[in-house]
Structures are given as structure tokens and as C-alpha cells.
Image 1 (cartoon, helix red, strand yellow):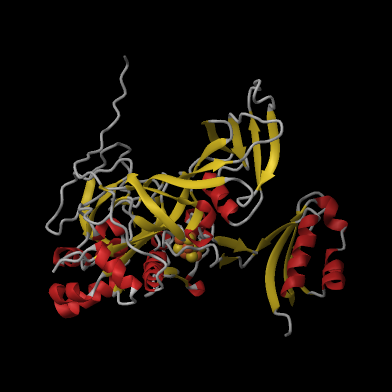
Image 2 (cartoon, helix red, strand yellow):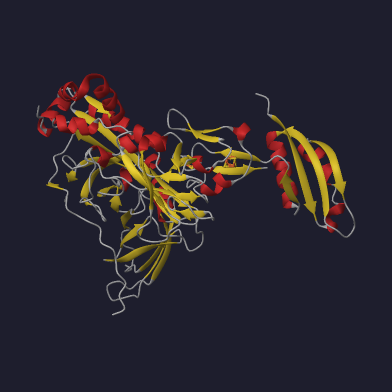
Length: 138
Length: 384
Ligand code: SF4
Ligand code: SF4
């Protein structure tokens, strides 16, 4: 079974003293990622910002992001994703009524159906779910 | 046609019993009518799963060497009530951790049931027979003596649905209520709910054997706030909150699938419990009651923006309409959400049916009936 290849657009924010850190080198060398710099905004005194696209194996990409975070770099995703944990969910449907885009519905078996394509990432279901079954993932 | 519990149990023993779930019974009566269905069917199984705040567990930890009289007690930093002899405690589902407001008694109960180690810290004053003053240790469910779940108020017969007419979002035990009638949340499992299927408590009483959190439990008493005198509609059903049950069972033999901690944003911690009750078809009236569907069962929608004991009623609504995903309020289509799991209610009713067919569950005659004349009294705050 080959590992799943994923692509993510990220914004990195870091303090000026971190500007020297060879980030892209480590991402390529240590985590086998393809790094595509989309935009860079680095000046000696201000907070630096880098917009990157990373591509690689899912696990390695996650570890690459953890590496960045462990170096005090804030990582925000341009395409965050909502993750629904079926094990935690009890199919109550409390999240259904608050989802304005109807991405959450109860199906004919009274089970929760999450229609990813309709989700606009408003995040209200994350707060509402009493089982904490939703997570926003980078 | 009249049928006794003894006759039904005999049929279970002889593999002759006919058991249907609430939905199957509903379908059969639609097809063949009450009379025929009543002659065929012995038992109809019901179920419910949802947040039941008034829950908790009596724990006996066993004695340390030297012994300690546990007065202040915490489990994973959640306070439990001591002062019940020396090493007994009651852990309430809604008690909150001193460290994490999203974790509470219900989560400790779920963790214990999952086999996790739970930190027990306890202290006492130290006396001649209990010289020890404090302990800090880890316990598991297997290792302690007893874990008796006793829930003073479960299985609400019916419950009001909630909405919000104000301009701000409200966080309640009925979930988030969006401003300007943005949504409606409701709480019971409609036609699956045990007490809506035996609304006059003809077969459910003190001592009734039930499915409780995945194991066998019993109705211990009528529940607190048992509002059985609530007026009934043409279907014998109360519209809005009415009867309740106090339930007892052994946490050690429960299944964590039906016992789950919950955190309601802005409100706090609660326990989600699964309960199932098989109802014997003792006569045709009982069959008629058992065959009622979501279109026949009604509740009221109340406005939670009024923070008062008696909140204004917006309208009456059937569970069929609530379940459709939208209800109409002042000409507007308002989306609905549920705090109870109908999927798990159905699963529980199906399991109870299976248990009966496999002779793992026999019906019991109530020792005493539940009171039918109770009302709920308010508490007046007096200065002197
Ligand atoms: S509110 Fe949470 S537990 Fe309930 S259906 Fe939605 S995701 Fe599942
Ligand atoms: S994040 Fe918003 S849009 Fe997406 S599923 Fe949750 S409530 Fe619906």
C-alpha cells in the first residue's frame, strides 16, 4: 500500500530572529516534501510571513508541520478542514440545526451525514457538539 | 384480550414469544389494526438515548492501611460527595473538574467504564479509628468494591423543545440557540421513548427490569420532578415534561457505548445514557397506545430567551414535524436539532428485542405502581 500524497497551502508567521532558520531546507531534506513558495514577506524588524504549498506523504507532511510549530512558527492553513470523528459521535443531531449551509444532516437511518463539499468552515458545530466530535485540521 | 406477565415469560421460555420494536409495532398496526396486532404481539420494545443530567454513581473504594475517613474527595480533579460512611462517595454526573471545565463527573464515569485509571485524592480529619489524613492514588473500576449507578431523574416522559426569540445567541442544556428563532432543539426520542409508550404507567413501575447503559437495571422509584398529574391530550399523552424515573444498576457491567460524557458549551457537563424498556401488550388499549407514531406525539416549543421558570410557549408541535428537519415559526422555516440519539434509541430497542428472544431478558411485574398524582412545586426564596 503506497502512502497517501497530500498537498497543503500554509501561511507561516515567525518573529524576525527566526528569519535565519533554513526552514525550506529542512522540509525538503528531513521530511521529503516538495516546497513551493507562493509569497514571502520578510523584513529584518517585522514579523515574517511565508505562504507555502507543501506536497508529500500525509504522515511526513504532518510531522513537517509539527517541526515548524516546535520552532515557534505559527502555522495557519489556507484550506482548513473539518474532521468528524464517528467514534465519538452519538448521532444526536444537535449540530444539524446550527449548520446554516446544511452540511450536516440526519439520514434515513437517523445517523449524522457530513457533506464535506457544503461545509464553509464556520466552526459553530465544533462548539455545539456535546461529544466534541469535530476537529478543525490544518 | 388480556395477557399477563407470567404468560409472556412462559412464552419466552418456550421460544414462542412475539416481540416487535416500537417502529415494527407501529407498522403492523397500520397494516392490520389494533385488534389483530394485539392478539399476535406479546411485547413491544422501546429505547431512549440522551443527556440525562440527574445521574451519578455510588462508589465504594475499599479501606486503606491505616484507614482514612474520606471527607473531601476528587476523582481526576472532579469533586465527589463523601460524608457517606468512611469510603463511600457519590459522584454526580454534572460535577466539574477544578482544572478543565469541559471535563466532569460524566467523563470520569465514562473513563472508569473504559477501563482507564482514575486519580483518587481524598482527605479527612484523622480520628482514632481512621488515623490516616490523606491519600493520592489511582483506581480502576475493576479494583474498587462497588460502582452502583443511581440516577434520580432519567427518561423524561416528554420534554419541551427550545428556541430563542432574542437578538443574541444562547448556550443552554438544549444546545446553542441561534438568535431570532434561528433554530429549534428538542430532547426526547418521540415514538421510541419508553414513557410515551406507556403514558399511564400501567406496566412500568417500581421494580421494573430495564436495559440500563448496556446492562440490566431496575426502576428504583419515580424520578425527581415526577410531574405525573400533567394534563393529557386526546391520545393520553402529556404535552411537555411529565413523568420521570429513578434508575439503578451496576456500572461495572455496563457498556461504554451507552454511557457517555457530554459537554454542552456554556452550560456544562452532562451524562448521555441509554435506556430500554420492553412493554408487555397486556390488552388492546396497551397495543393502541404502543402503536402511536411521531405524528400523534406532541410537545411545546418554548422561548429560552426569557430566563424565567415559566417561559413563554411559542407553539405546539408534533415529533413528526420536529423530525422532518424544519418547523414553522411565524411563517418562517426554522431548522431543528436533537439532543437525543434516535439511532441509538432504535439500536437499544432492537437489542432488548434480541435479548428477550435469546432468553436473556424476562419481564417483571412492578412491585408498586408509580404515583399518578404528582406535581412539581417551585422553590420560593424567602427572606425569613
Ligand atoms: S452534535 Fe456531535 S455527537 Fe451529536 S450528531 Fe453532531 S457530531 Fe454527532
Ligand atoms: S463548520 Fe459550519 S458549515 Fe461546516 S459543518 Fe460545521 S456548522 Fe456546518
